[in-house]
Image 1 (cartoon, rainbow, N blue to C red):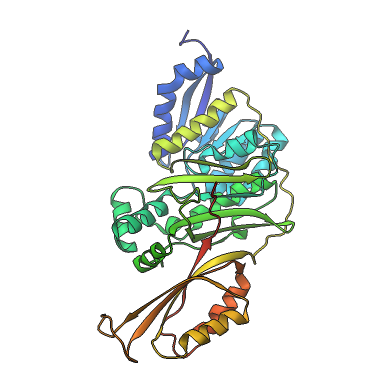
Image 2: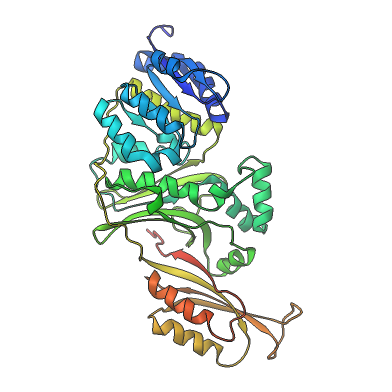
Amino acid sequence: MAGDGEIVKIGLLGRGTVGGAFADLVAERADAIATLTGKRPQVSGVLTSSTGDYDEILADADVIVELIGGLEPARDYVARALAAGKPVISANKALISTYGEQLFAASDDSGAPLLFEAAVAGVIPAIRVIEESLAGAHIDRVHGIVNGTTNYILTEMARNGLSYAEALGQAQALGYAEADPTADVGGGDAAAKMAILARLAFGVDVTLDQVTYEGIENITAADIAYAREFDLVLKLVGTAERINGGVSVRVFPAFLYPSHPLASVHGSFNAVTVESPSITEITMSGPGAGGIQTASAVLGDLVSILNDTPRVRGDGAPVEIVKDVESAFYLHLEVEDRPGVLAEIASALGDQDVSVRNFAQRTESAEGGSGQGTDEAARLVMVTHRTLESKFSAAVDQIAELSFVKAEPRVIRVIEEEFVD
């Protein structure tokens, strides 16, 4: 019967947007979960900034769900719950990416599981797939769009020609971006998620401070317009991959060719692609983090605990973090329109063995129109073939020092994989 089932008490830490949605889902789905697992979840205590006592909630709960965010007191609460042998579910990407090793050790010591599907990519079951479905696969690379705010902004800039500021304002008005969007648009949110995915995919110890990341604050409508000429789409991409015995984990704006599986992920949606010799490539996509989406992922972890589903996790071995990796690049230059400019730029690129795949030039007068003459400025836009970042950076530094360069060169990475069948 729907009313049957052993009661499992849940101590809920935090009842904001996600916590409130989770509490509602537990009440709504309790009958179905009891039928599926033989156990009925019930929120037995709630801790907020103004109500509840953690010690009392912990003593009474069978499972702790941490949705308060931040590092402290979340770390203390989670560590104490694990030490007490209580399973913990968290949606706290900052906590897991910063103190993961400490908390995993506490989980191993007590045997109490620590689950955190909701910490990465909203409702997409990326962690569950990596830990369970692909536990026996040798994963070479995980990359994806793991921040819905930035994906929405870049989509609106491309679709409707909005400036970055206009698209950000629209995202804030719709609730996709916080009043202070720094963690999202600066790449920090995505970096924390990629640290978690790298740790799980490769079984190595990767923390947030080892992830190289940059955001989308400096992207312009002109970048997107020029890229369209080269048939490219702009996304904020997180990548974790094995390179020469080490691991590289980074987040950066990147242009993709249309046949890339991430190129068609628009709006606030997220997507994660996993590559392995045994599976080639799989891509999971769905709504990014929001109240109901995150709460749904938390509920999925709860069902795993009630079903006693085993989770496989790497041993967190030390690993070399590789910083100098190969990439193709988009390079945007504003220069004086005079003879010899292209030759000197080509020479600087050639000195570092950088070759050009695509090239475009636009000429503008001082008044903003088009014409001919030595008082005009030229915009040179090119896409290179793959080269080491160190070599490309050296070439750009050399170009920036040339007397005819009128503004700081603009650089965006390009992912060349086209995934053509």
